[in-house]
Image (tube, rainbow, N blue to C red; front, side, top):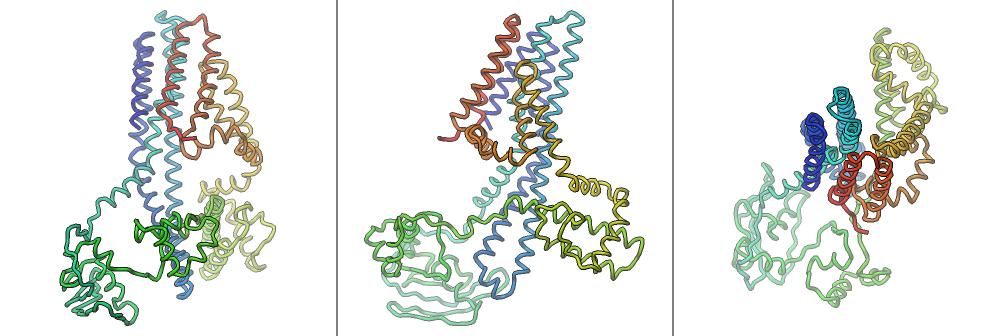
Length: 566
């Protein structure tokens, strides 16, 4: 971020000085347009983007916690028949996240559109200002042409600075969540210089502990003699696990004392206490690391011989020997690969939209022909059929489905509703109706539309390679976007091509580039600028401006774009 800001400041000084050299008004316009692009966009969209980013990171954390709860508690969920409750909670958390993601995408698109509008308006102002100064003999033709090149080709560093307001919103949200962990108070502080009693006997006296206002243990006194086995039994929830945590000093008692030998637990050195205790929980926790490192968590300085002895006692030595990499086998945390996928998210969003459309159409029909009982039954039936539709990802809408899962009686009712409410939706819910019409004809409209965008972008890209007034790189991206969206096969071929894999994949996925990709892209830009420089040999002013633009690109690629290791 600091490098991006420094590059933007240096470019503003360099290009502003070139503008003032041509004419003071051109320099002022350049600096104003740079300031508007670099600081206006963050001021307008930055606060909202930051709030959305924080809320989105919280929603991601909540959804991840819910997924892990469902995976790790699957047996209990099935045992107590809680599938519906957990599914409803999952859907609730997923819907919250989808809403925030849509809001973040809208903010990003709005910021990008505003940036493009600023660039376009600045170019128009520069065109009119240059024509005015040229007609009044205040600048020559060469200076007029140089001012247009300056205005159209030097916005890169400032747009990069402006995009930080929306691009870093999720990162700042994640950072704030991490910082809250550092701000949490430690409930039990480790004792580094405490006592090391010789006796291993333990005892609790008048022990009391409660979670919030719920008392778990009250006036409990027990002794655990050294060298003997003591069993504790009782109904679920009576405090056995809580007593275990208190004896291991995961918590400190709220009343009474717990002792090791003759010393209170809080006065015993924590490391010494850990060497005296071992625990086997009902659930084992595995970290994403090698099997060896998981075993070393209990004793970091254990030798291979000690590890083998422990594995033999646990009867897992035969299993480990059967693994190809033995103790060096990588383990994965359960639930780490869960993902619903982008296609499923689109299908669920489409399903929710169709349910809203049907709900509004039924409400319109029964407003004209009141029948509350029939309206309720038809709406519940339609929502159930939509929620269970297996073709939502690929089909358009129920009216064009080839299966027709409605019963005959319900099908007649829903057709009457559609015939009456369909035309009236344009009056009562025009936005929803237009979206419905767009989705209904999406496949017929999108392909020629994106093909047109691709060819227009390709034409402007070629034109920009010849005329330095037009930047070619944005139009190359526009052409790639248009052609890619016009055909799935073409998109898949482009994504699988060496051109995309070697040059664009890292930028799309990580907003970074590898050194070789940076060199190739920068070389392409350099060749385009060199051709323009050679064609404009009779305009030295423009040649110097092109050199400054090339230097700006080199600095931006070197310091403004993160480099990935090969």
